[in-house]
Length: 277
Ligand code: FER
Image (cartoon, rainbow, N blue to C red; front, side, top):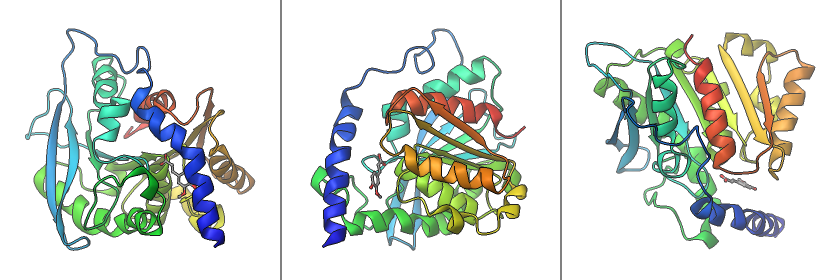
């Protein structure tokens, strides 16, 4: 019973934000197409998954000037609870942000993989009233195996990647931010760069995420952000407090935004600038 009440409360709180994602105007500047600059390429990637028993899709961004003769680090970028593999492009305009940063020489050329983080046989975005069902929440947790056992190996077979932890990053927004923290901190052998933007309550409690705080020294970057107006700020704040108490170095950025693309555009840019250096 309690669970159902909590889910309904969460749905009520999030309904506005999810609807808002379709309506809000793009962030000025950062995510605006700049004329005359070189553009990256966006592709649909598909892979077989023994985890869902289906063929699954991911959106892949190749940087401008991409060449199969070079090798690239990879950023895995995870969407929110109401999104899919198109949310970072369609809602945040991640590809435009990356093009702009690359034109300024502000980021290392990288491949960006935007998966569908709902590892279910039916991984379509559910109707709004089913967003918070136990089955759908479980799909986001199950994505850990799909990512590690299926998607990453498939990407490393298909593209000229630098296939080691020091050249692999994971970040996400909201539900995907929780996934990125859970999977990234849980698998230091796979990821050295981890970012959670507006991480949702699917984030494991701090003492479970990092039971041995000293282990975080293996990370090259742990990045946390959230908007001051975001109802989920407490999740990130609790992790920040724990990290501070245990002397774990991390980036912490609280901005003036809410649970929205302005915050995610800004923090994608801040995070990307720090990667792979
Ligand atoms: C919750 C509130 C919000 C929750 C998830 C979210 C798992 C995710 C929001 C988003 O991805 O935008 O209680 O529980």
